[in-house]
Structure formats: structure tokens, C-alpha cells
Amino acid sequence: MFAVKTSSRFRAFLLVAGVVLLAMNLRPTITGVGPLIGLISRATGLNTGWAGSLTTLPLLAFGLISPVAPGLVRRLGLERSLLLGLVILTIGTLIRSLGSVAMLLIGMFLVGSGVAIGNVLIPSLVKRDFPHRLGLMTGMYSTVMGVFAAFASGISVPLAIDTPLGWKGSLAIWSLVSLIGIIVWLPQVRYRQRLPTYTRLSLWRSPLAWQVTLFMGLQSFLFYVNVAWLPTLLHTLGMPLAAAGWMVSFMQLISLPGSFLMPIWASRRPDQRALMVITGILFLVGYVGLLVAGITLAWLWIACIGFAGGASISLALTYFSLRTKNSRDATQLSGMAQSVGYFIAAIGPISIGMLYHATNAWTIPLILLLITSILMLAAGVPASRNLTVEVPEESA
Image (cartoon, rainbow, N blue to C red):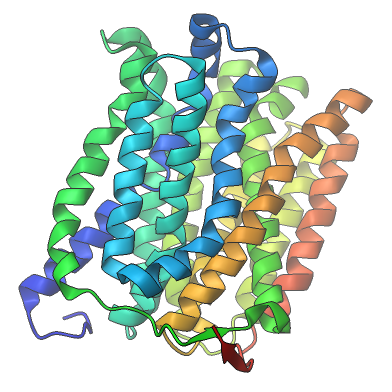
């Protein structure tokens, strides 16, 4: 059975079920919005600039709220903090469905805030309660995130158009999933454990922490650019729009084996540099293929990018545990890496869009993605060494 801090099998079952439900809630409320932007804009009169902010606001919330999560754990405990994240997520999901532009924007920020708490704290929970199953649990919850992210992207428009729900109901329906998550997670509140309140870790002075942080940010940059611009890129290069949309689904599908397997492989070896190099090479092959061959063998280039994308996010999540000694340190590293990382990620779709608009071609944007992949490798290879963060503690 899983190595948790209690002999109760039922407690272990509830904990695993809780982690799965948490993971199910970390992406659908965000990935389900993009396909609906056209419908939302027409219904609310939201202009193009503000419509784009519906997908940018959660990333900004990730960056702003992630550093706050470790403080929540010190005050409320890990279990209650995760419950709070689910509650905020549920409130945001319902508020954004009320119909007004103001409620949309407020709701999306709250959604991002709730997701940010879960993003930061689940690696800490895995580090604390599954120390001998880090790879398996990380692979499991990252794969669940990927499956539900893709599912939400695909089902949001049919729900809005083919059912009486409309776009409001299509957004609101995910509150049912978060409510189920709250119910399943409630028993964990009894096992509240807080981080020490008298010290804090000065990770901002740790080179290793910065390497993990930059790797997290740069791979997120690539992911959100792929989601935002890949259909347009393929269509511009000559692929029919419907086929380009299916290529995005294919990319998300092929990412799932990478999401599941990479943490398992990583946790079985003390040094992950070989895995990191393979991941980086797959990104490079994919982007070079699109740059040189265009849509010829597009399925191969997208498969490389998709597998590398799933592998890289799972590696980043695994490093929060592998590069730290305990749950407290994992929380601190996760908060730092995701705070800076998602600010970097938020720059991605905007910068690529501006470059494409300025040049009316995909050559320079693809070159930028190649450069980003190389920088990701430059940060990721040293982050993959068999080390843990070693910095002095200071008074809180």
C-alpha cells in the first residue's frame, strides 16, 4: 500500500481519491474558456483585448498567489489550505457565469487564485504523504490534469451550442466537479498539519532553486504558446482549420504518456539529466521540423512537441519533491517556481502574437521558440543533478 503516515487503508484511499479530485479541478476551468471566447465576446460585447485577458488573468493570478500559498500552510495547515483553494475555485467558477463582463473578469481571477493554491501545494502533499511513491503519484495527478484539460477544451463548445446550457452553463458546470472535490477532501481537514512558523527558507538566494524556477517558467512558456497559437500556425502554413484543431487535440493526447511516465522514470534515478536532454531534443526536433518542413510530416513534429510538453511539466512538478528534503521545503520551492514561472508563461502568447503580427510570418516566432527550448535546457540540465536546495534559514 502507499506509504502514508497512517496505517489506515481507508485514510489512504480517501487521500488518493482527494488528490485525484484536486487534479481534476486544476485545468478544466481554464482550458474550457478559450474555445468559448468567440461566443462570450458576441454575447457580452467584450472587445478583443479584454477577451484575450480571460485566459491571461488566471496566469497572472498564478504568479501573484503562488508566493502566498506557503504562508497559508503555516497558518491553516496543508489540508485546510487545499480546501480553501477548492472553495475559491468554486466561487470563481460560479461568479464568472453570472453574465456580466465585470463578473467574468473577477471570476477568472478567482479561478486562477484557487488553482494556484492547488498547483503549489499538491507537490508538497505528495512529498509529505507519498515519499516512496513520488514518481507514481506525480505522474498520476499530472496525467489527470492533462486528461481533463483536453476534455474541457473539447466539450465546452458542444455544451454551449448543442445543449440548453449556453456559454454560461458551459462555464458553470465545472463547479459540480469542484463541489465533488470539496466533499471528498473534507475528511482530510481532520489531519491538519502546519509548517513551522518560526523559520522560512531563503530560496531566492539558491542557484538550484532558480534553475528549477527558470525550467518551470520556460517549459510553461512553450506550453501556453502551443495551446494559443498552434492552430493558427498550422492553418497559416496550409493546413485546413479543422485539421489544425485536431492537431492540438493530438498534441494533448500524445502528452499524456510523457506526463505519466516521466516522473516514474525520474524518481527511479538520482540524476535526471539524460531525461532532460531527451525532452529538450524532442522540443527542438518539433520546432525545427515546423520551421523547415512546415506541415509536411506535421503529425511527427506535433508528436515530438506534445510528448516533450507532457514530460517537461511532469519533470518540473517532480523536481519540487526531488530537489528538496521535506514537505516544507517542497512548498517553498513550488511557490517560488510557480510564481516566477507563470509570469514568464504569461509573456509567451503575447510575445509570439506580437512577433507574428509584426512580421506576418512564423519564421521569427518559431526561432524564438527554438531559443526558448535551448534556454529551458540550459536551466533544466543543472536542475536535474542529484542535489537538494541548501540555503541558510532565517527568522520569519
